[in-house]
Amino acid sequence: MVSARVSRLWVLFIAVLAAAIVSTGTVWATTGACETLPGGVIEMESVANPTPTGYPSLGAAFTDINNGVYTGTITIDVCGDTTEARARF
Image (cartoon, rainbow, N blue to C red; front, side, top):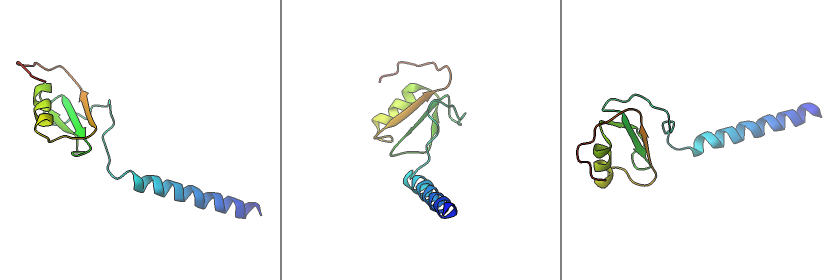
């Protein structure tokens, strides 16, 4: 009786774990953690573009946002110092 109950719980655990893995869809970088990407110290990703991308400045990152490269929920990590030259946000 106890082994049958443990087996059912184990199967339920595996099913929930599998559903959680399948439902995530895409893998996002950890927000707030800098991955040291090529391109710069500003790291950005979104629902439309889930691959993290590095930018040399916030101005360059916002240019891509304004051009529609990133839509939906957008995550920006500032991982170092930048010099902004007349950036317009």
